[in-house]
Length: 351
Ligand code: TYM
Image (cartoon, rainbow, N blue to C red; front, side, top):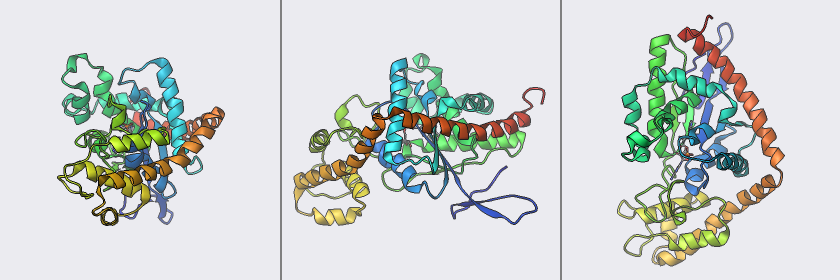
Protein backbone atom coordinates (compact mmCIF):
# COMPACT_ATOMS: atom_id res chain seq x y z
CA UNK A 1 0.00 0.00 0.00
CA UNK A 2 1.30 3.43 -0.90
CA UNK A 3 0.90 6.19 1.68
CA UNK A 4 1.76 9.83 1.14
CA UNK A 5 3.97 11.66 3.59
CA UNK A 6 2.49 14.78 5.14
CA UNK A 7 4.44 17.67 6.66
CA UNK A 8 2.79 16.98 10.05
CA UNK A 9 4.94 13.88 10.50
CA UNK A 10 1.89 11.68 10.08
CA UNK A 11 0.81 9.62 7.13
CA UNK A 12 -2.79 8.80 6.40
CA UNK A 13 -3.19 5.18 5.45
CA UNK A 14 -5.85 4.48 2.87
CA UNK A 15 -8.29 1.97 4.23
CA UNK A 16 -11.44 1.80 2.13
CA UNK A 17 -14.59 1.60 4.23
CA UNK A 18 -13.03 2.90 7.43
CA UNK A 19 -12.39 6.42 8.63
CA UNK A 20 -8.80 7.52 7.84
CA UNK A 21 -6.56 6.71 10.78
CA UNK A 22 -3.32 8.59 11.37
CA UNK A 23 -0.31 6.27 11.42
CA UNK A 24 3.24 7.05 12.38
CA UNK A 25 5.62 7.79 9.53
CA UNK A 26 8.13 5.10 8.75
CA UNK A 27 11.79 5.80 9.36
CA UNK A 28 14.66 3.69 8.04
CA UNK A 29 18.37 4.29 8.39
CA UNK A 30 21.57 2.29 8.34
CA UNK A 31 25.18 2.41 9.38
CA UNK A 32 28.17 0.41 8.17
CA UNK A 33 30.14 -1.81 10.55
CA UNK A 34 33.46 -0.48 9.35
CA UNK A 35 34.94 0.26 12.79
CA UNK A 36 35.77 3.61 14.37
CA UNK A 37 32.22 4.75 15.02
CA UNK A 38 32.87 8.47 15.53
CA UNK A 39 31.40 11.72 16.73
CA UNK A 40 30.34 12.60 13.15
CA UNK A 41 28.23 9.42 12.90
CA UNK A 42 26.79 10.14 16.33
CA UNK A 43 25.92 13.83 15.81
CA UNK A 44 24.95 13.52 12.13
CA UNK A 45 22.79 10.43 12.47
CA UNK A 46 22.50 8.22 15.55
CA UNK A 47 21.73 10.94 18.08
CA UNK A 48 18.81 12.05 15.89
CA UNK A 49 17.57 8.47 15.51
CA UNK A 50 17.49 8.18 19.28
CA UNK A 51 15.91 11.60 19.88
CA UNK A 52 13.09 10.95 17.40
CA UNK A 53 12.42 7.29 18.00
CA UNK A 54 9.19 7.75 19.98
CA UNK A 55 7.67 9.82 17.15
CA UNK A 56 8.07 7.32 14.34
CA UNK A 57 7.79 3.69 13.31
CA UNK A 58 11.55 3.01 13.10
CA UNK A 59 13.87 0.47 11.53
CA UNK A 60 17.63 0.77 12.08
CA UNK A 61 20.08 -1.52 10.40
CA UNK A 62 23.73 -2.54 10.70
CA UNK A 63 24.50 -2.74 6.97
CA UNK A 64 27.14 -5.45 6.93
CA UNK A 65 26.64 -6.20 3.22
CA UNK A 66 27.52 -2.61 2.39
CA UNK A 67 30.75 -3.01 4.36
CA UNK A 68 31.80 -5.71 1.89
CA UNK A 69 32.34 -2.94 -0.66
CA UNK A 70 35.54 -2.21 1.26
CA UNK A 71 38.15 -4.83 1.86
CA UNK A 72 37.60 -6.47 5.19
CA UNK A 73 38.49 -9.77 6.81
CA UNK A 74 36.01 -12.32 8.12
CA UNK A 75 37.01 -11.82 11.74
CA UNK A 76 37.02 -8.03 11.48
CA UNK A 77 33.55 -7.93 9.96
CA UNK A 78 32.12 -10.19 12.67
CA UNK A 79 33.73 -8.16 15.39
CA UNK A 80 32.59 -4.88 13.85
CA UNK A 81 29.01 -6.17 13.58
CA UNK A 82 28.96 -7.02 17.28
CA UNK A 83 30.65 -3.81 18.34
CA UNK A 84 28.39 -1.60 16.27
CA UNK A 85 25.22 -3.35 17.47
CA UNK A 86 26.32 -2.75 21.07
CA UNK A 87 27.23 0.82 20.26
CA UNK A 88 23.79 1.55 18.80
CA UNK A 89 22.12 0.13 21.89
CA UNK A 90 24.52 2.01 24.18
CA UNK A 91 23.74 5.23 22.27
CA UNK A 92 20.09 4.84 23.23
CA UNK A 93 18.30 2.92 20.48
CA UNK A 94 15.48 1.14 22.25
CA UNK A 95 14.19 -2.19 20.91
CA UNK A 96 10.79 -1.40 22.45
CA UNK A 97 10.51 1.58 20.08
CA UNK A 98 12.65 0.57 17.11
CA UNK A 99 13.43 -2.51 15.06
CA UNK A 100 17.20 -3.02 15.14
CA UNK A 101 18.78 -5.74 13.02
CA UNK A 102 21.70 -6.88 10.88
CA UNK A 103 21.05 -6.37 7.16
CA UNK A 104 22.29 -9.79 6.03
CA UNK A 105 19.75 -11.53 8.31
CA UNK A 106 16.99 -10.38 5.96
CA UNK A 107 17.81 -11.84 2.54
CA UNK A 108 15.13 -9.77 0.81
CA UNK A 109 17.53 -6.80 0.77
CA UNK A 110 19.85 -8.54 -1.68
CA UNK A 111 17.00 -9.83 -3.80
CA UNK A 112 15.44 -6.38 -4.12
CA UNK A 113 18.87 -4.91 -4.90
CA UNK A 114 19.09 -7.15 -7.98
CA UNK A 115 15.55 -6.38 -9.10
CA UNK A 116 16.15 -2.64 -8.72
CA UNK A 117 19.36 -2.86 -10.72
CA UNK A 118 17.14 -3.39 -13.76
CA UNK A 119 15.76 0.14 -13.38
CA UNK A 120 19.10 1.74 -12.41
CA UNK A 121 21.37 3.21 -15.05
CA UNK A 122 25.06 2.41 -15.00
CA UNK A 123 25.84 6.09 -15.65
CA UNK A 124 23.86 7.15 -12.56
CA UNK A 125 26.00 4.93 -10.36
CA UNK A 126 29.27 6.11 -11.89
CA UNK A 127 28.27 9.72 -11.23
CA UNK A 128 27.76 9.21 -7.47
CA UNK A 129 30.17 11.45 -5.54
CA UNK A 130 30.86 8.76 -2.97
CA UNK A 131 31.77 6.24 -5.68
CA UNK A 132 34.06 8.73 -7.39
CA UNK A 133 35.72 9.63 -4.06
CA UNK A 134 36.21 6.04 -3.00
CA UNK A 135 37.17 4.70 -6.42
CA UNK A 136 39.61 7.62 -6.66
CA UNK A 137 40.29 7.12 -10.37
CA UNK A 138 41.02 3.41 -9.84
CA UNK A 139 37.71 2.53 -11.57
CA UNK A 140 39.01 -0.67 -13.16
CA UNK A 141 40.44 -1.97 -9.91
CA UNK A 142 37.72 -1.34 -7.32
CA UNK A 143 35.07 -3.94 -6.54
CA UNK A 144 31.77 -3.63 -8.36
CA UNK A 145 30.13 -3.74 -4.90
CA UNK A 146 31.38 -0.16 -4.50
CA UNK A 147 29.52 0.81 -7.68
CA UNK A 148 26.40 -1.13 -6.63
CA UNK A 149 26.42 0.27 -3.10
CA UNK A 150 23.61 2.82 -3.72
CA UNK A 151 21.34 0.19 -5.31
CA UNK A 152 21.54 -1.91 -2.14
CA UNK A 153 20.91 1.25 -0.14
CA UNK A 154 17.82 1.99 -2.28
CA UNK A 155 16.64 -1.59 -1.64
CA UNK A 156 17.09 -1.13 2.14
CA UNK A 157 14.93 1.97 2.08
CA UNK A 158 12.25 1.03 -0.48
CA UNK A 159 11.65 -2.41 1.04
CA UNK A 160 9.97 -0.90 4.10
CA UNK A 161 7.76 1.83 2.57
CA UNK A 162 10.04 4.35 4.25
CA UNK A 163 8.90 7.97 4.48
CA UNK A 164 11.94 9.49 6.18
CA UNK A 165 15.65 8.66 6.10
CA UNK A 166 17.61 10.42 8.86
CA UNK A 167 21.21 10.74 7.64
CA UNK A 168 24.18 13.09 7.47
CA UNK A 169 24.65 15.46 4.53
CA UNK A 170 26.95 13.06 2.65
CA UNK A 171 24.02 10.67 2.05
CA UNK A 172 21.73 13.21 0.36
CA UNK A 173 22.71 12.12 -3.14
CA UNK A 174 22.05 8.45 -2.35
CA UNK A 175 18.55 9.28 -1.07
CA UNK A 176 17.85 11.31 -4.23
CA UNK A 177 18.94 8.33 -6.32
CA UNK A 178 16.67 6.09 -4.22
CA UNK A 179 13.75 8.35 -5.12
CA UNK A 180 14.69 8.25 -8.81
CA UNK A 181 14.92 4.44 -8.77
CA UNK A 182 11.60 4.12 -6.90
CA UNK A 183 9.85 6.56 -9.23
CA UNK A 184 11.18 4.76 -12.31
CA UNK A 185 9.99 1.42 -10.95
CA UNK A 186 6.55 2.88 -10.15
CA UNK A 187 6.26 4.37 -13.65
CA UNK A 188 7.15 1.06 -15.27
CA UNK A 189 5.27 -1.41 -13.04
CA UNK A 190 2.63 0.67 -11.22
CA UNK A 191 2.66 2.40 -7.82
CA UNK A 192 4.66 0.09 -5.57
CA UNK A 193 7.20 2.11 -3.61
CA UNK A 194 6.85 5.09 -1.30
CA UNK A 195 9.31 7.79 -2.31
CA UNK A 196 11.33 8.70 0.80
CA UNK A 197 12.52 12.10 2.00
CA UNK A 198 15.97 12.63 3.48
CA UNK A 199 15.88 13.96 7.05
CA UNK A 200 19.05 16.05 7.31
CA UNK A 201 19.35 18.44 10.24
CA UNK A 202 20.57 22.02 9.86
CA UNK A 203 23.31 21.45 12.45
CA UNK A 204 25.67 18.50 12.76
CA UNK A 205 24.91 17.00 9.36
CA UNK A 206 28.54 17.47 8.37
CA UNK A 207 31.01 17.24 11.25
CA UNK A 208 34.50 17.97 9.94
CA UNK A 209 37.91 16.42 10.56
CA UNK A 210 39.76 17.82 13.60
CA UNK A 211 42.94 17.97 11.52
CA UNK A 212 41.51 19.43 8.32
CA UNK A 213 38.19 21.26 8.67
CA UNK A 214 37.67 21.23 4.89
CA UNK A 215 37.27 17.41 5.00
CA UNK A 216 34.44 15.57 6.74
CA UNK A 217 35.20 13.45 9.79
CA UNK A 218 35.45 9.99 8.27
CA UNK A 219 35.87 6.39 9.39
CA UNK A 220 38.34 5.87 6.57
CA UNK A 221 40.67 8.72 7.58
CA UNK A 222 44.11 7.20 8.13
CA UNK A 223 44.88 9.55 11.02
CA UNK A 224 43.27 8.64 14.37
CA UNK A 225 43.59 12.28 15.47
CA UNK A 226 41.18 13.46 12.76
CA UNK A 227 38.16 12.04 14.58
CA UNK A 228 36.91 11.27 18.07
CA UNK A 229 35.82 7.65 18.43
CA UNK A 230 32.94 7.08 20.80
CA UNK A 231 35.17 4.62 22.63
CA UNK A 232 38.02 7.12 23.17
CA UNK A 233 38.93 7.47 26.85
CA UNK A 234 38.77 10.92 28.50
CA UNK A 235 42.49 11.64 28.15
CA UNK A 236 42.48 10.72 24.46
CA UNK A 237 39.49 13.01 23.90
CA UNK A 238 41.24 15.88 25.74
CA UNK A 239 44.45 15.38 23.74
CA UNK A 240 42.66 15.24 20.38
CA UNK A 241 40.71 18.42 21.10
CA UNK A 242 43.82 20.21 22.34
CA UNK A 243 45.58 19.28 19.08
CA UNK A 244 42.60 20.12 16.85
CA UNK A 245 43.52 22.73 14.27
CA UNK A 246 42.09 26.23 14.70
CA UNK A 247 41.75 29.17 12.33
CA UNK A 248 43.94 32.24 12.17
CA UNK A 249 42.98 34.90 14.72
CA UNK A 250 41.88 34.40 18.33
CA UNK A 251 38.12 34.93 18.34
CA UNK A 252 35.79 32.02 19.15
CA UNK A 253 33.22 32.64 16.41
CA UNK A 254 31.46 30.61 13.75
CA UNK A 255 31.91 32.11 10.29
CA UNK A 256 32.47 30.92 6.72
CA UNK A 257 36.13 31.92 6.89
CA UNK A 258 36.54 30.06 10.23
CA UNK A 259 35.74 26.45 9.34
CA UNK A 260 37.69 24.93 12.25
CA UNK A 261 36.02 27.05 14.94
CA UNK A 262 32.64 26.61 13.27
CA UNK A 263 33.10 22.85 13.52
CA UNK A 264 34.22 22.92 17.17
CA UNK A 265 31.39 25.29 18.13
CA UNK A 266 28.89 23.02 16.37
CA UNK A 267 30.10 20.01 18.37
CA UNK A 268 29.96 22.01 21.62
CA UNK A 269 26.50 23.38 20.85
CA UNK A 270 24.96 20.02 19.93
CA UNK A 271 26.37 18.20 22.96
CA UNK A 272 25.52 20.95 25.47
CA UNK A 273 22.20 21.98 23.87
CA UNK A 274 23.32 25.62 23.93
CA UNK A 275 22.99 27.87 20.89
CA UNK A 276 26.23 28.78 19.12
CA UNK A 277 25.52 32.51 19.72
CA UNK A 278 25.49 31.93 23.50
CA UNK A 279 28.84 30.13 23.30
CA UNK A 280 30.37 32.91 21.18
CA UNK A 281 29.29 35.38 23.84
CA UNK A 282 30.67 33.27 26.71
CA UNK A 283 34.10 32.86 25.10
CA UNK A 284 34.41 36.40 23.70
CA UNK A 285 37.96 37.60 24.41
CA UNK A 286 38.93 34.35 26.19
CA UNK A 287 40.90 32.79 23.33
CA UNK A 288 41.04 29.29 21.95
CA UNK A 289 42.70 27.61 24.96
CA UNK A 290 39.87 28.14 27.47
CA UNK A 291 37.27 27.22 24.84
CA UNK A 292 39.03 23.97 23.94
CA UNK A 293 39.48 22.96 27.59
CA UNK A 294 35.74 23.34 28.22
CA UNK A 295 34.81 21.67 24.93
CA UNK A 296 36.88 18.62 25.86
CA UNK A 297 34.97 18.30 29.16
CA UNK A 298 31.63 18.64 27.35
CA UNK A 299 32.60 15.80 25.00
CA UNK A 300 33.94 13.62 27.85
CA UNK A 301 30.72 14.14 29.83
CA UNK A 302 28.54 13.30 26.81
CA UNK A 303 30.46 10.10 26.08
CA UNK A 304 30.55 8.87 29.71
CA UNK A 305 27.01 7.40 29.94
CA UNK A 306 27.32 5.83 26.47
CA UNK A 307 30.64 4.23 27.42
CA UNK A 308 29.20 2.94 30.70
CA UNK A 309 26.28 1.29 28.91
CA UNK A 310 28.69 -0.09 26.32
CA UNK A 311 30.77 -1.76 29.04
CA UNK A 312 27.62 -3.46 30.38
CA UNK A 313 26.61 -4.66 26.93
CA UNK A 314 30.11 -5.91 26.14
CA UNK A 315 29.99 -7.94 29.35
CA UNK A 316 26.68 -9.52 28.32
CA UNK A 317 26.89 -10.42 24.60
CA UNK A 318 23.66 -12.45 24.64
CA UNK A 319 21.60 -9.32 25.26
CA UNK A 320 22.41 -7.77 21.86
CA UNK A 321 22.15 -11.12 20.10
CA UNK A 322 18.56 -11.62 21.31
CA UNK A 323 17.57 -8.05 20.37
CA UNK A 324 19.04 -8.36 16.86
CA UNK A 325 17.48 -11.74 16.26
CA UNK A 326 14.06 -10.44 17.28
CA UNK A 327 14.65 -7.32 15.14
CA UNK A 328 15.46 -9.47 12.11
CA UNK A 329 12.25 -11.49 12.60
CA UNK A 330 10.17 -8.33 12.72
CA UNK A 331 11.92 -6.75 9.72
CA UNK A 332 11.69 -9.99 7.72
CA UNK A 333 7.92 -10.21 8.25
CA UNK A 334 7.55 -6.81 6.59
CA UNK A 335 10.11 -7.50 3.88
CA UNK A 336 8.52 -10.81 2.80
CA UNK A 337 5.18 -9.09 2.42
CA UNK A 338 6.63 -6.29 0.29
CA UNK A 339 8.67 -8.64 -1.89
CA UNK A 340 5.58 -10.69 -2.76
CA UNK A 341 4.08 -7.47 -4.12
CA UNK A 342 7.27 -6.54 -6.01
CA UNK A 343 7.67 -9.98 -7.60
CA UNK A 344 4.07 -9.96 -8.69
CA UNK A 345 4.36 -6.48 -10.21
CA UNK A 346 7.42 -7.53 -12.17
CA UNK A 347 6.12 -10.91 -13.27
CA UNK A 348 8.87 -12.86 -11.50
CA UNK A 349 8.24 -16.64 -11.42
CA UNK A 350 4.98 -18.41 -12.30
CA UNK A 351 2.83 -16.34 -9.93
P1 TYM B 1 28.03 5.27 7.20
O1 TYM B 1 28.28 4.15 8.13
O2 TYM B 1 29.13 5.72 6.33
O3 TYM B 1 27.51 6.52 8.01
C1 TYM B 1 26.47 6.40 8.99
C2 TYM B 1 25.77 7.74 9.19
O4 TYM B 1 26.70 8.71 9.69
C3 TYM B 1 26.61 9.90 8.89
N1 TYM B 1 27.93 10.55 8.89
C4 TYM B 1 28.15 11.82 9.26
N2 TYM B 1 27.31 12.78 9.71
C5 TYM B 1 27.86 13.99 10.02
N3 TYM B 1 29.19 14.27 9.90
C6 TYM B 1 30.06 13.33 9.46
N4 TYM B 1 31.36 13.61 9.35
C7 TYM B 1 29.55 12.04 9.11
N5 TYM B 1 30.12 10.89 8.65
C8 TYM B 1 29.11 10.00 8.53
C9 TYM B 1 26.21 9.41 7.52
O5 TYM B 1 25.64 10.43 6.74
C10 TYM B 1 25.23 8.31 7.87
O6 TYM B 1 23.93 8.86 8.11
N6 TYM B 1 25.37 4.70 3.13
C11 TYM B 1 25.09 4.80 4.57
C12 TYM B 1 24.67 3.46 5.14
C13 TYM B 1 23.34 2.98 4.63
C14 TYM B 1 22.08 3.64 4.77
C15 TYM B 1 21.13 2.76 4.17
C16 TYM B 1 21.69 4.85 5.30
C17 TYM B 1 23.11 1.81 3.97
N7 TYM B 1 21.78 1.67 3.70
C18 TYM B 1 19.78 3.12 4.09
C19 TYM B 1 20.34 5.20 5.24
C20 TYM B 1 19.40 4.32 4.64
C21 TYM B 1 26.32 5.38 5.27
O7 TYM B 1 26.81 6.36 4.86
O8 TYM B 1 26.79 4.77 6.36
